[in-house]
Amino acid sequence: MKRAPRSLQHHVLYRKYNGQDSEISALLGKCGSRHYVILPEFPGSAEGYNGLLDQARTRLGTDCVTLVRGGERRADGAFLVETRDGEQHRLGAPGLGPDGEPIEGPIFLADDVAPQRGDVRHPDAVFVHKAQTVSRLSAKVPAANGICLNYPTGIVDPAHELMLEARGTLRDSSLSPEAPVFDAAMMADAELAYSYLEQAEMNATGLALTVRKQINGKSFNNSEITMWDVGSLILGLLAAVELELAPADRIYRRIKKIMASLPVIQDGDAAYPPTLINVRDASIERRGFDACDFARLTSAVTRAAQHTALADASSQLMGKWQITGLMQGGVLNNILKTRIQSSYLSHCAHYQTRVLPALGQSETRSPYREAFAGETVADRTVNLLYTVDKIGILPTEPLLLEYVELGPSAECAVLTDVFLGAMKHHFDQTGQLLAPSETPIDTAPWFVYQGFDLGHETRWNVSYRKGREVVFEPVASSPYGIFSTKAAYLWYAVRPCRHTRKMLDMAQEHARIDGFGMSSGLFLDGYAQMKNHADLNTNGIVLQALAHLKRRTR
Image 1: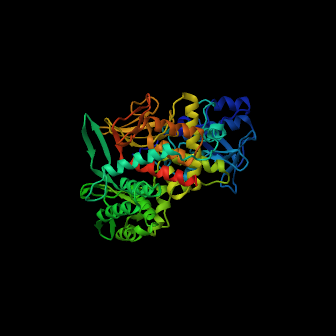
Image 2: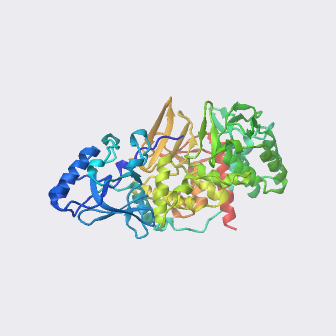
Image 3: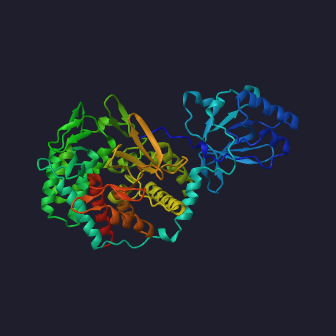
């Protein structure tokens, strides 16, 4: 579920011009400049300067104007400008420069944009006007855009705040890396998770019921499965082989049956698996194509291909897929009921770039990779966090699935650090232990998305559908705030430390449903279990996490 990101401008630190002479300070008041007017030279008198400033404000329709000179383009791409009193500003990609000083931006040259048409999307936009005289300024940026607000100087840019906060929190001894542990209790958890995969199996296809719930002895099951869940099933079964939970040849036969049962839609030159199928007979329930789910399935099949017994079946299945026609500009498109949709602006796009080369698609684009630019780690981190906010709520997976299945990229490692530090900071501030992820739940609205939500009043939010409305609520107070079982196991498997061990202990103590499987999760309000409610994705990922953990202890 995606949404248009709410602006970061509610939190942004607009640099103030303290230290200017009293006459200019009175004119600027408490306003932080978003408009820089570059002049060849300043007027010689205060009267001439103030008259020029008034003209600029009138012409641009905002008080948020600073007259500067210079405009030299530096090697790092920033503009270097200077105010009348000698204060220097660097305007460009927001972040920290190599010397640790902030760079404001991004820059929009006023002659090249028309914000009223939506060209300017970044809430920290800096508008630069180059003019020989103020009379030539063009008022292209209406005040209604709200790009200049009188926020107090104590409010900081959330990306910088989060980066600095994470650095401090990560030094806490409870987040210090520890040797991973795989013990008898974890093996029992693996056996329980595998029991879900066995009990939910459909003999005809090898697929599994995606959600199972029992009430008063009656079973309520979901028999529709996405390609994401097919991937989780295959990866969970491969983990069961590694954990020696059943004879390997028996598990291999089931995986071959699953691969053989998957339908393929022929659509011109393209061929791809559908969005949704029925687990009982693999009939198509919903046509279309989901790029993220396909990446998960591809990851599973390419991993299965590494097993000699599954190499031929994996090759045959991948040979049926033809996705070149679905690629556009390095991005794999989704096919919806009525339109084609780019999958670029999603938290799954980076995961896709790690997986799709196995299908010959090596020139793929990632919003994480493209944002992760700058001369310093701090600069790269802040730029990446801005992109995360633009996309929306960041859940535990596919972020940590990249760790487990493919090894972490630089972008994944940085986001994991920040995510972990933010969870620990929340715990320190509130005493609430988080393990956020998207998950089915045992009551309406039945499915929730939750995770890290940079740039909003609360960092941890839950999102769900209420009729046609999409609702966003703070995880801490929402009745649908969930402690995700699979997230707890993934975090300990990837980053074993005292804090993630606390998360694992919570799941082990409360999420086990004997003879049934691992519960989808716990309600954050009291950490009460979703009783007799389990799902395929959770149990498959728990198996993946435990196999990864056991591998690390060898």
